[in-house]
Length: 236
Image 1 (cartoon, one colour):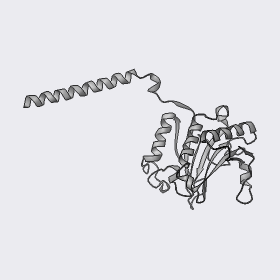
Image 2: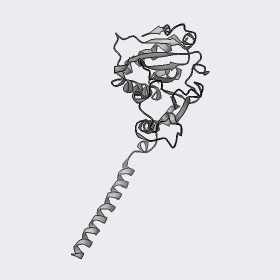
Image 3: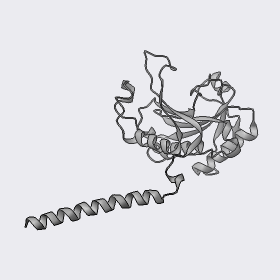
Image 4: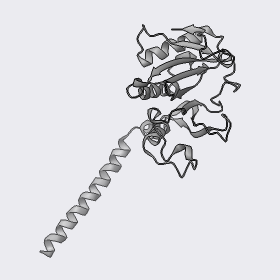
């Protein structure tokens, strides 16, 4: 009986050795481009906003993470969905887990901008620009919000706006009681050809029907608006 057990143990050990050798061989068979990270053209920073009465609006904006490879983007997306970050980000506003956009508290925002650009109108990269704005009603929060937000992030980091990608500064998603908003920000509202092409590409990537019109608002107009509405400078 002991001899049988010894033989079984030897067979198991041999199988494990062969498995490891096979894994090593398979790893060596992969082309080098699959074993390295794929750099993005830009480094991007994810921001989180939650109102704090004891802080200014600017102070309530928090940098969550930055990344410059496709693999790190997906790792960070996984973090947003699953990983407990309370030790890494010891501030109560993240309430133990960073959530998907649809799971944020009302009044909170996510922003993703090229590194060095703050998610605010006053930033030098934004002050002469504007935003393509998409309004979503509450029922779309559970059906389309997260998909729209992810698709916009992919479009930005993948330079999906083609030759006009350099004009894109970032994007913001606002969770609000009556309706949510997603906006793509550009740096120069005066470059009509660029702004319009970015708007058309945005509608195409999100598969927004031609009947639905989205508008582009200049930041300067938003800052001096009277009432709750800002005029659209361009529409697609």
